[in-house]
Length: 146
Length: 405
Image (cartoon, rainbow over all chains, first blue to last red; front, side, top):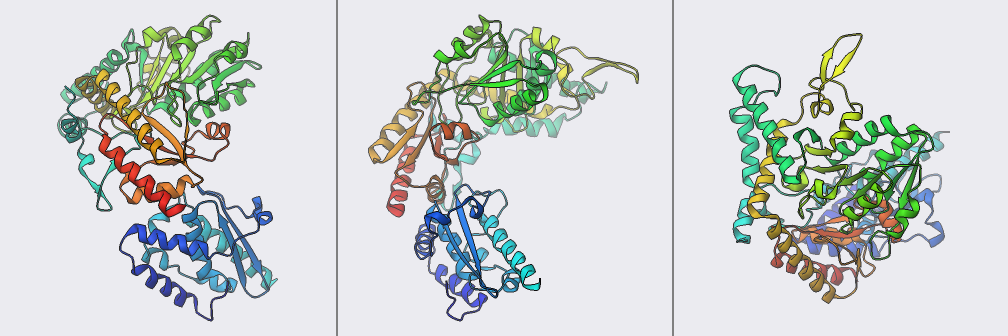
């Protein structure tokens, strides 16, 4: 997914702006569902156990692609709201260097009201997704150095 | 006289809102709300006579000990046990099952023996037995269920062998609400001299339980699911078993005499109550049982049954719902999926409409596997719920369908 030359924080601010239009939770969810529809999905054969993120009530697959400089993520989920959440993360973090991903403070999560989904026991696995993205970044960073 | 408005006003939390909408609490299978008199009883224990039980010679300790033993008597009466000695206070259903799995296992289970459970069990009535079987080299066997969620009773006699040492069965399925014919199962097991543990976590709050009539060898439940505090539960055990089983945990209060060479154990029920128990919880739970008594279990069952039928009818009218546990003999738990909508998506939307339901596998993954699904939406209702709340749930489901389909 391309960032259209925007910085990570520009993308985060844009997401915050978009969500600020909605007072009602249902409208926020509608928007989240729309975001999920824009997600570049995995092919069925890419939905492998390897890419499955543990600890979610819904299934989430996250596949990284590293071109030596930047990481590109693709993802899918069997739950629509979860798909929207992972789509937002991808919007912010896909097409970034491992260092950028590792250093990013994902402040948009709290600002759009998703932080209640961040506790470790929450079932949508937002925390698990963020952790997995950072883990991939760490691994590719080590590879770059090596 | 069953006055729903009066009953609802007994539960302070039911008056609150979530996300600016009235709370519709349909997660009673996970835990129930507390009436003010239970909260008051707990507060009173800390406010006015709090002191450790069975220890001091002083006035407060006497009061605490008296209230605690009085709570034991109330539990005994509630389930019609023969003796107070058969009522062990534990931390909850899970703790009670672990106690039996350990102590019964130590005393009676040898390599190659068999433990029989059912495919309807909560993880709490699977894993402790699995752990014991692993420790002892015993084998866990499972009574299967039919497509309507009922137990396949024909298999019971087939699965009971000369090696079967104990049978553990849930009174009511937490995941799909099915009521098991425990009396029949106990009778069948007793023909082969096999004791039966009944997991009453979802049974005790929905109908009369009479352990002598059931002839249950063990009956376990939690305080928090029967309108009492969290962290307190009950193990009822027939005296002959409890006398013969070794203690589970060692510590204070469970001993008779201690020396470094040899310790002798206290008599029942104290032998199984090591350390300072949650006596305030026990006092609160006894208050909850009194409260239920004041409403009347028959009234409770009747209202809950009405809710179940109304909810089933209303939800069916929405179309596209698949129910799990379709046998007629169920409590006021409805477990279902809506079209091909993920239960998690539905739960998130319903939450924001003020409706608290549970989604997922309900700590009963084998039940979900049996139906080839990951989870369901579970609406578990109880006597303080109303038809109006069911209407709100239905509006919520319609909203879910609109957004997701």
